[in-house]
Length: 479
Image 1 (cartoon, rainbow, N blue to C red):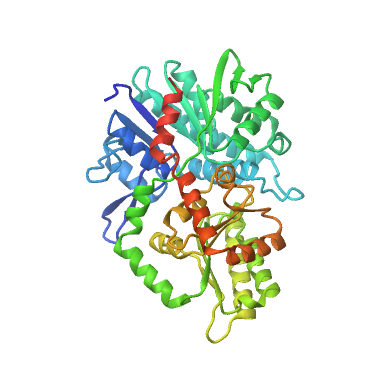
Image 2: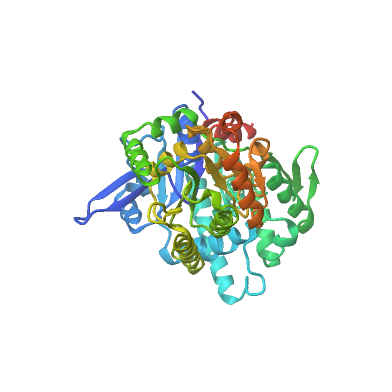
């Protein structure tokens, strides 16, 4: 057992709360690679997870807990203690929605409609002050809770400023920052106001180690450091020297936990969903996609490609069904509400044009149903993953691991997963609808033995760096 304390900081924590009609609080464990990775580390050392209260139920739980420290008895996160921050609601909303999700996310995913946005004005400066205050709240808590020489793992674009802030408060700590998103190239990163762009870079360079999901994103970060800072970048060693300190830059490609994923897929609720889907689609071939209704996921172009497939290859009429499962994301932002509406519109148009009494070509579900997603993975003949830009994309990895038919993976070259899976996937330009349509056609025609062999190799690559190892490697990099 290690005697080094580990602190984790992220916007979303490992648990969340809901309030029943009678005012009772219910807690549930979160999902994702970070929770899985932490659970393995927490069993061997003292771990504290610092996160934000995201809902009114979370805030209620924090106010009832001494010092915001939650009692997690019975919830499997490896024995970690959780400190949830009750950041003022207005500050949180401006930091989270206006800056993190509407500015930094848009920059790193290259999503702006540049003739109209972004527009940085006095309101943007007020929002940025909230982002600074939000990051400072984390730095204050981490600095106050950390033992001497502790390791601190700060996560993602929500907390870009926190490493430097924490370094100023506690120079004795070993700090790593990990970016779960892509990183924008300099020509796009320069959309940010000069001072904001520099602050973000300086914030991350407050860490001893900066981690990225793919080499491409790490190199883009180094490019930005070289372009916007008087920093010395050594690409041979992957280091940035700036203001008397050196930050190491590393690549840690997150994979999936094969045993955990397959165990969950063997649960009865997944079998129930599988039976229900079989009743809907019969013995037809299945094209599956599973996404958040997130602008970067490129759902509309994916549906347009399926439409073009049906137009150009009428031999598939009645023989294929597209299962498109898109669960809600960030509906407090108007751009996301509009995008979800656009997804619904094109789906309805496809079914209006091609449906027959015995065949519905597209089944769109816009709600979160994890067991249904696992069932669809198992049934898929073709898995479509076509993001405009994605830090990694775990759907591309989960699908082959759970596939029972040996699915073909049609994968965007702009996903971080392309670096690991590209050899056995069918690669596409996510903006080229016609190419995507023809690639779907090729995938449907692929001989079953070739598909199965590719899928087996994809599953091996997808599980090469499970969450436990991914997280442990970041902590080891601090040594």
